[in-house]
Length: 403
Image (cartoon, rainbow, N blue to C red; front, side, top):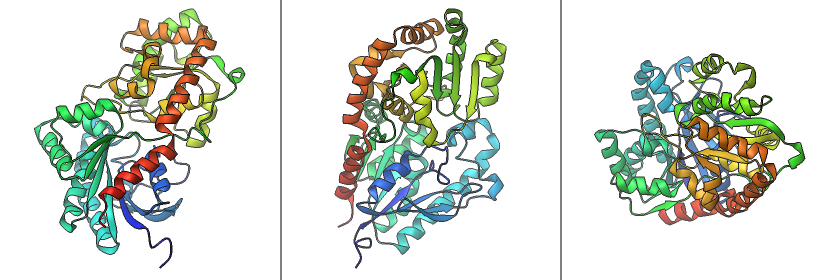
């Protein structure tokens, strides 16, 4: 028996996943999976998208991408996330039954063909429901991880009952912030165990503190999907006030999503289009340079109309890792990372005057802002460095696995 085949089998179910090397889609599930491949034989089941391979091995992780519609229609997940896509294009609800059935069948095939000891499910719905049906019928345990949108969003009696069922049948559940554990309790989710284990960031090799001399004090940076919970519209609303104090300020927006046309129109209506640069989707490899030259990273997170909000944002971890001062919207999930420094960093972004003041405070006092950020970076290394996070997930999955 080879060393590879002696590993326990781990099946990962996820919706958001890179479609190829260098993809701009969020890569945190792959980053965790590839680190877990040191201890497990990892197979990921995730939806197919146009231009992606149906099967490949990436960084030691075998990836199975299931087809759920004609290729040109496989747009339910990518380009903004499932919830945002369903909200923006009602016809995409027609894709959901095929999506669920295809995911179930793909998971069942892997479970039948391979010695899977444990399933790691990312998002309570829909992946948790698939694990409940596919793994449960074969007696394979599963661990479910909630990232925020599935817990705070997806409201309604039916969705809440399904979340409770998925959590109850899980061997363990993890959430990425303390605020999410509190929300899980409020919703009546009662798994056998629930731990706060965030996703990680590579703060030792990729997202490292840059030379402060390289920063442009008049560059603001936003990184993230262009969807309501990211709150970018509130930063645009604050820009005229920021420009009144510092006319040379430019806002760089690295991200993609269904709200881009509306946000571009809003910038034009405010008369600030010349000071706003929509960079589009950026490969992960290019993000450190953006964080390294920005005067301040602005993440105006809010709780959107559906109740969705951030769990613990990866982009915020990355910015802090690069030593970039931050101004952050006041959602509960960020406090685990920010600790006591939250009083200097967190603001209600819906108050455009308060948001503008917070941004200007950072730009006008860069030395103090950098000192706070380096303190946050030291805290982040202890909490969210990938090596530490992967070791904790390996411990949880091994405890749940079939012996």
